[in-house]
Amino acid sequence: MNTSSTFDLLVIFTQPPLTASFPKEALDLALVNSTFEQRTGLIFLGAGVLQLVQNQQPNVLALKGTQAMLKALALYDIDQVFVEEQALLDYSLTTAALLLPVASCNTAKLQQFIANSRNIITF
Amino acid sequence: MTDKSFVIHVCGGPYVSLAPLSALRFTKAALAAGHTIQRVFFYQEGVALANALSCPPQDEINLTKAWQAIAAEHQLELSVCVAAALKRGIVDAKEAARFGLAHHNLAEGFVLTGLGQLVDGMANADRTVTFS
Amino acid sequence: MATLHQLNAQHQLANCLKLLAATDQLLLIESAVVLAIDANFLQQLPSSVKVLALSDDLQARGLLHACPAAISLISDAQWVAATLEADRVCSW
Image 1 (cartoon, each protein chain N blue to C red):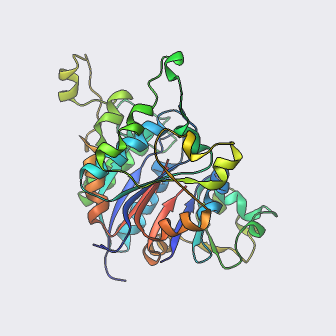
Image 2 (tube, rainbow over the protein chains, first blue to last red; image 1 turned 120 degrees about the horizontal axis):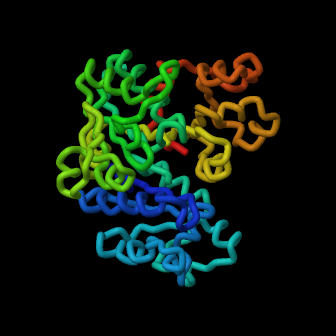
Image 3 (tube, each protein chain N blue to C red; image 1 turned 60 degrees about the vertical axis):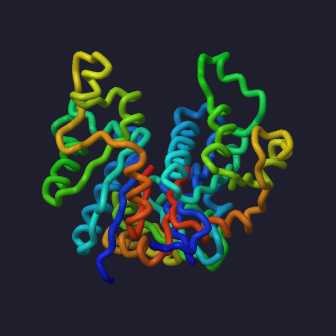
């Protein structure tokens, strides 16, 4: 087993909130991965950053959303959360306006995370 | 190249994607090259492949049966995420009893498991390949 | 530490390109093989990126002979080998 990787699993979120079951099932995998003491990193890419917007009200559509799960990430020892810098600019967002503490990274930095991960799954 | 082990992660469903077919092609090619398939894990829409009640037209490939055949021939584990399966109406006898359902439809050769099986597989296999 | 990016649909190309490093490889499978004959495709990639496409996926769509020489056609057996030659696979 390669133990030199930064992350055992890097989960990449590319879909806006409430896109079918993608956000929920991506987070389920990240949480289980961390529960198994595997180092877990998250990247929110493109429209995926919108999953981190505050004040989502999925209940108006009788949906549950993923805000509670996202806020609970730290309880599962997942604190390596990255967002694409350009995506924040595209959607006029700042890291301070997001649901949880994240690091904003340019694509060169994100490519380094890819190169230092053992497995990657995109949702 | 020395023999390696793979986890095949199928998260695209039949009829909404080509994931189950592409994963089958890849699995056949990997086995033919002498590699090991440690586990096939079905997640998201991929769980629909484990529906024993799907009846494709006679002149179309039956992907459920194709996976059952290759699994039987090579003793492959076909793991299906239980949480993803239950909400999509794929249940085995045990879950049907637990939820008071009149029927169960998990195809023979498939087994309902947890996401831990995918995590365990990824941690131990040489390579994990996702089909979405 | 090269990554094999396995792309199966055109709509994820933009996201894939963001995380595609100059030393990585890009494999076109399923519907994404149509990019092989898209005149605007290759110029979007770093010139150092090796582009592969599944031969059977092109042939099935009637595009095999239109595929430019800059794209390497591979069999399913070579596909398996490519996933092992890379350090990891990232499916889009």
